[in-house]
Amino acid sequence: MKGSVAVAAASAALASAAATPAKIEARQSGTSSGSLPTVTVKGNAFFAGDERFYIRGVDYQPGGSSDAEDPIANVETCKRDVAEFKKLGINTVRVYTVDNTKDHDECMSMLADAGIYLALDVNTPKYSINRGSPAESYNDVYLQSLFATVDAFANYDNTLLFFSGNEVINSDNTTNCAPYVKAVTRDLKQYIGSRGYRSIPVGYSAADVESNRYDMAQYMNCGTDDQRSDFFAFNDYSWCDPSSFTQSGWDQKVEKFSNYSLPLFLSEYGCITNKRQFNEVSALYSDKMTSVYSGGLVYEYAEEGSGYGLVQINGDSVSENSDFQTLADAFSNNKAPSGDGGYKSDGKASECPSKSDTWEVEDFTGQQLPAIPEKAKQYMKDGAGKGPGLDGDGSQNAGSASVSTATPGSGSVTAVASNTATGGSSSSSSGSSSSSGSASSSASPESAAQSLIAGDLGFAPFVCGAVVLFSSLFGAALL
Image (cartoon, rainbow, N blue to C red; front, side, top):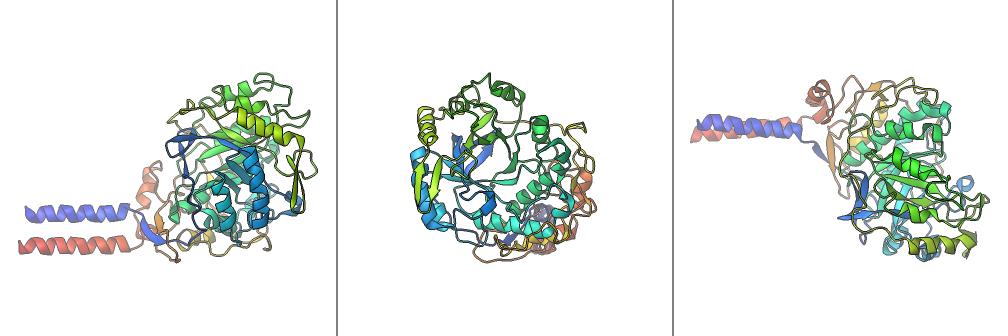
């Protein structure tokens, strides 16, 4: 009897070792900013600790896309602009481009001290999905840059979220890019988990295109858990003052997304057709919208010749445009509601959209996605290493692209890094193509069985299990 109990215990230990992702060491990212609670996703909302978190912020990229620079690597720039952010009373800035080779500790600390989180785009002009050739531009060189950016920001407590893409789809005939955007989202989530970072939300920022916006939202929320986004954001310039909740059509969008199970927010808003009064702020943070929306980001902080800027920057000096104070007053007069805002604590995945005149996805349908490029799998266990920064050669015509279709669930985390200061490696593999998919709680039984092969977990769990088995049996023989 004692021997049988020992065998059962040893067998359980072996099964537990096989089921538990291996621990590997992670490359350290920036120093934690520490003064703000981390933000997590619960149901269709964000929470900072136990408090509902609403994004109240601005889009921040001085110089614009034509002069891509990293605004949070320049300490003097940060000092100048954080002072203005405090006047606005915001809690979030979105940055579209950063240099993943630079030190961001001081700026991230200044933002944290001001109560401000960072919503970060991980793509750069040279390292991004090319909507004209999405398959070729989804490659290992591209993913290395994205993962290096995650490494650079994952350990800051005030890193709010990562955008996996921005306006990649800007028309009905570019919806064929959707599987690649979703694959990038899956890969980023897997990298964050595999490298032992906290669960930082990853999602997409959609263009202001009415015809396919809802399809894209549904698409980013369908499939297995590893495939689904953590949030969905979109740009919306439909409220042009003077307007109202109903005149702008915002009431119809709230109704349309009423059963959406992910956090939803505006990644850009602030129409300039007429003088901006920012009356939409009162609606956005009212009980008319908070059960569905989690706030938004005003476009944009610095004037870049388009008329949207809240301030003019001239060297080290900043002058506030007239709508700067208007926005500050709107935020001040419309606090976030108390309580949970009527959020939904749980929700099921959406149905994947079918092909239509406005949804031209053909190469990958339903839950099908391109598999992570073979050469990019190593980053899950070894880390990305040093990024290319803003001076790299670019990725759109470089590297090895995906050559197969992924098994749903293959983006699940199969090895978890210890988040330490030194790098390391493991024999555990990352998610793989349809020929060797790894398991997820939502994956098929076949892919779950495949995850138990030694190639997916490495031999360490089995060696440890064998030692436990031998010791238990030997010990039982002595009793």
